[in-house]
Length: 454
Image 1 (cartoon, rainbow, N blue to C red):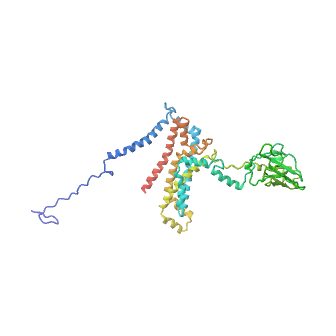
Image 2 (image 1 turned 90 degrees about the vertical axis):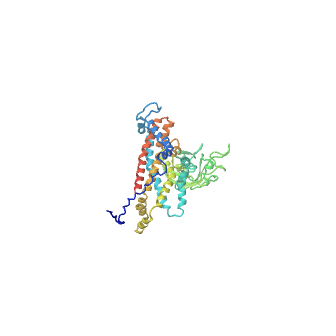
Image 3 (image 1 turned 90 degrees about the horizontal axis):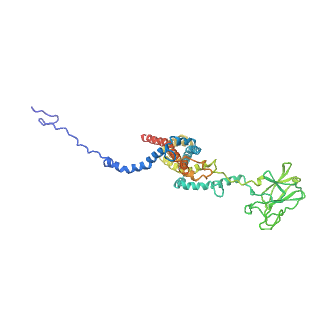
């Protein structure tokens, strides 16, 4: 009895089920076996071990040895991290660096990136700000060593500072002036006072010395003897010096001598100033009848030292000054990364906020900055890692007298290892720096993984 299959003719046997063809065995991405790929990676792994893992391991072992390397020192080298004054100063300065340098650099980069986004010359400005990144730390250190020079004729920072200061408080042109032999003047309160009172109708001579001819004011002219005036006190204040041996008479006005133009003269009675005058270009001055019976005083303001600016590289300001050099270099780096983040920001949100009446400051604070938070985190973390190992600028910019005050851990590591011949302590500092960097790196890796998951 024949059986019929569904959908087929009676008596026709059923076809065997079809078997899908077997798929070819998948190869690795490289098209080779894993062992071959491992062989290609081996040189990189060897270099990684030789240049990274071995130094870390050796430094860890060496940090527990004594300075000669012949014995075990336990944790003595690590105790030195918190008992040695130089290392404690370096640790304190590193904290200042980590707090301020990345923050200021990132803030400036954010400001530059946002403000130059809409201007036509923004690209040129960004190029100028980023240009210091092309300079090595060594070259930047040499540049800023000159910028912070104490002498305003050399240091750009003090040249600007002194110019601003002298605009509001002019310095004296006669800081070295002083009375000579047989002078009628005597020292008094930083200035000079006549030994005897003066009276109307007489011409008083106030000879001084000590100012180089090329340092005299431009308004100084050839000095003349002031004529007498019956109702007034007159006189001459001048540089009582003539070049050439035996030339000129002491206490007498000679044709080649210059007047102290602009010098202040005061008439003092019973400790009170009753009249005052300024010396003319030819050295002459005139006081009213109030000066009769008074002593003439050249106040201390005539002789104060010229303002010489700020001691940028002194013990107080040396660390902020070096941080300023670092910010000059790395603000451009922060600006470029933040500008890239701004370029990828959805503009619809910004425009919607403006349509809703938000001010530019509100748009910046509530929309721009939150959207840029991932980029800002990358910049801050990168700069934090960078400043933990800063060395070149701190080594070059501070002079020897204030380098101890600007010390950081990387510089102290160099000093302990090479100058003081304490390799055990230097290795402990290296391990300590590694421990400081690891949490920052871990945070950065964790944040990047979270970004990938989104």
